Length: 118
Length: 111
Image (cartoon, rainbow over all chains, first blue to last red):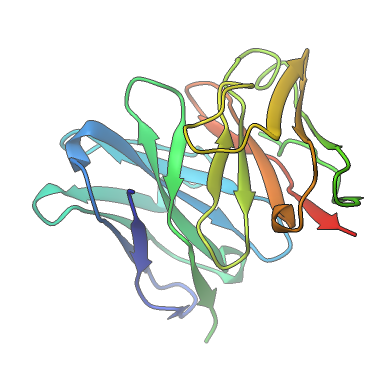
């Protein structure tokens, strides 16, 4: 059973950079796409983007200017950086696995709450 | 890209069947037959229960079924059980710009 675990600071100051890491328990990280998704309190889920292969990425156009994702295959981790955060970026952040040859997100982490506040 | 629309809550008695709708547009649900459904107990990882509109992953109860008509996908839970009480959300591919859009989530209550 694949497990994904998000980690990172739960509190980030406005204008700073939010940094999260997702650790994958099993399987080859090279064989899938790796996504970040968030859910602000009381709102729906929003796809942030994905990273795959040797670091290829696709980002949500609404966040593209502030997002960077990367892969660390040796440690079975992938990461998210979101710059210049505001209170609107306060959310539960999920990492998730996507099948490479199928349009399907099949496994998720449990999510981590990140609060943007001074 | 707007979120897919789901009812905020649905309830039913044990043994009954309930259906949750997921309404999208011609840019997502109507154009692609890749709607997924997830069961989410808050604080835990969402669990995939339906993919490609109507397929069940191995190990998922056959009490869960999915369908799609035009721009609306539906999830039916038959023989409702107490353990089915959770949040449920849908997800659809939305093209090579936005990639994925999600439903607004439905809280299922077993009376």
